[in-house]
Image 1 (tube, helix red, strand yellow):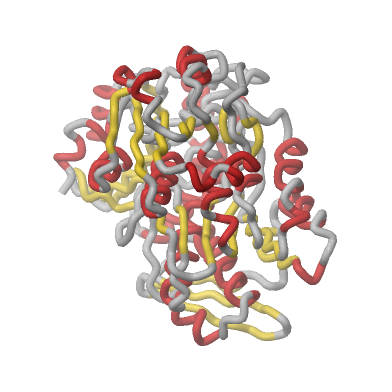
Image 2: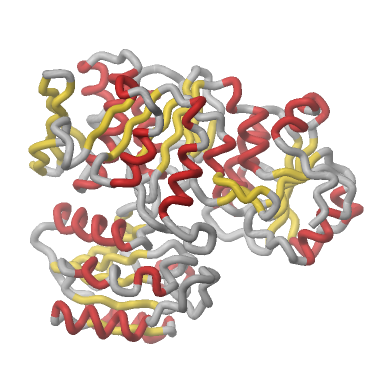
Length: 479
């Protein structure tokens, strides 16, 4: 690994005025694409390359008229026209791509480092972190601050229905999804460490990213490293690791805990006529809220946004009005249509906790319907034995399960590959519900045809294409 031309935070700051043309290598990732959009808004000339430009990010980059190349078209001569190369974390340390980039003579960096230095240092940065709920919570808070006329900047790691996935904003606040995944092969530190976070929200904290972290303590240490510069922390006290991190702030007056284990709540959560009602007990006062948001875990996510607003001087009446009508990110409990009289819901869930919470939310949203589930565990951790047993209990509320096997070897070195067939057998044995595993799209479609019936919901979960389902004719058949 040759780091002669690597630019860290200090070098980006000292050369900021000379960075005008930026090339994003593997631009179609959600983080890379949104960073590219923000850099274009800053007035930079942007181009990028990737192997494929699948929607939604591929379409959005083209809509924004960002020049996009195939990776096969990229060489040192092409890159020589740029002031800086931003390298996505999908580029491997010992890959041919890495060697080519290192030998160009052009400075290179990671997108979190670039974003932190060129944009976020000038903002009041609100970091939305945690194992689950980062994307949704970031979007909720961006919408609320917009309603409160704050002109927020934001970066959401998902596709939004009413606005671009990232914007600089005109106000002081910048709300950013703050991931603990590493930044690049040459920066093996969490992205959130580079965002200059002023106020930290921890929605949850469980073991994940087994390809990077050997245990929970190593994850906690990444969070703890930013605390010296953090003003306030809001943390879900139901997660021991979230408490561990918050306590390290060392200032109890600047920590707000919420959750089932907290008197603050949210409490008395109930759904009536398609809206959710709940209470928060704060500083001896009871505050009542009504929102379009459905699902217990989404109300917990929304609670963090409400607490942030209270912490920053907004009144109860202002906050109450800002939560009434909130939208969700695409692929988060997204109703895609109907198929053979069954509602089809698409969700990004792939961690056991998020799977269980998503099924619970769909049960609450469609209380009189059977829930037929399809799950494709495909992240590095979820396709390993790290979750072999914890996945089982997630499906206790399901009426049937199809486990889709993408046949990708895990790169979590301390674990074996997930046994998809065994998982299906264990779910069937534990709950006595129809359960199958498959590696083929045609078989998956056959199971879907069998399951789809009136008064049911087909809940499809995973962060990829579900054996190509979302790229197949299945989409055209949705009504």
